[in-house]
Length: 121
Image (tube, rainbow, N blue to C red; front, side, top):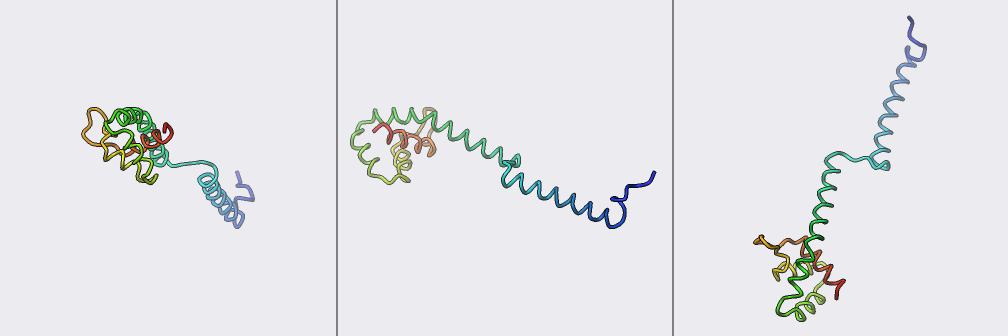
């Protein structure tokens, strides 16, 4: 059995170059615009979303602790005066983002709490 003409000589070289170029182009298009991701990237994205979901789920506890604190009116005024980027720090330092059973405050919960308190007003 004889090999086809396009797989012989210079044609074989052009065929392999085209196949390689097509494979590279498919990879570039797939990762850049096709939504393909590496497993490590997908895992990191899932972890980030899970952390945000947990923080948002725990924020009502923080809001409740904040609203039942002794100086709630003064603290709310101070929170509103604080810059948006530092409101989470304010909540964290106040201790309202320390969840039951924990000894340290969670900054992600504090930020979600500050966001919720800004909405509640």
